[in-house]
Length: 338
Image 1 (tube, helix red, strand yellow):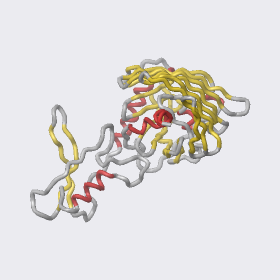
Image 2: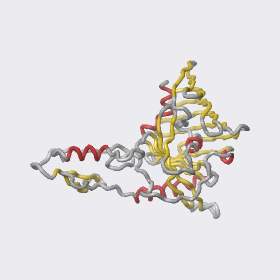
Image 3: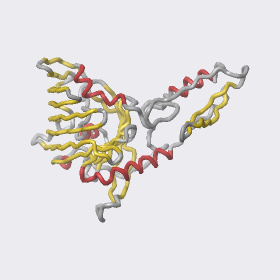
Image 4: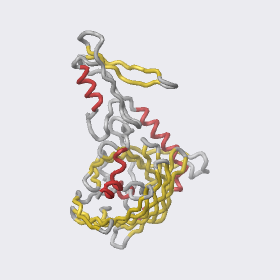
């Protein structure tokens, strides 16, 4: 069972990115469905970090006669954290609900092989010659480490017509939030017209309130680019590789437009001020909360958020009004601690 959890849940260690969604409602043009016969066919995804290629994934999605789908893929990644090579085969029904999975390969020098059959609220998992029954949330979607094409079917669980933030259930019992966040029209300078300018639909996908992934789809609803902002890692369909940097730049510009409010609440027993701490070649930014009453100097606590792009309040996308660093700091400042 440890192997299963490693394959499916490793990404939960990634830091979160503050939502790039602009405040307030917005009207978006209609988007194509993410599950249709147009997604069927062969393709290649290129994995990269800041224009440095880390690996490739060749895949084929087949449309079954009963309306379901079968996909196979071969993924090879060679990054500083280690290498992984794996072969996958997955079956889904016409609604994108997984029916079976097989995966085998090598990660960090360790061989692995698993098969899974999904039925009702239990999955039969076979690994190392042993089969176990694993309870899971019925109709939960698959999310697999290092396999991009499966994100097509994960994203297809989003109801485009209904729109807005929606909960997506992930195997075995995780919850994610997905939202269609916008449409980005970008240009690739190294391409000739008319292929130079392309419009992509952008979706924000957050796992367990802690992992932010951005998905872009093309005019046919096919997955075009998957981007993890915290790692600056992108997996792009080969024909859209030239658009990775323009899309990343567009995303960054939208994130910068969202300015967090770090001021003290009205009537608070403390003040809040911006501070800058000089460091070697840069400055550390923060908010200093000072009690309004009491004897100086105050005892003080310094709080530092984790790695990756995030707000100093440590706001988790998908959890409304949950800002643990702000809440802890305000609690302390209300009791005489800076």
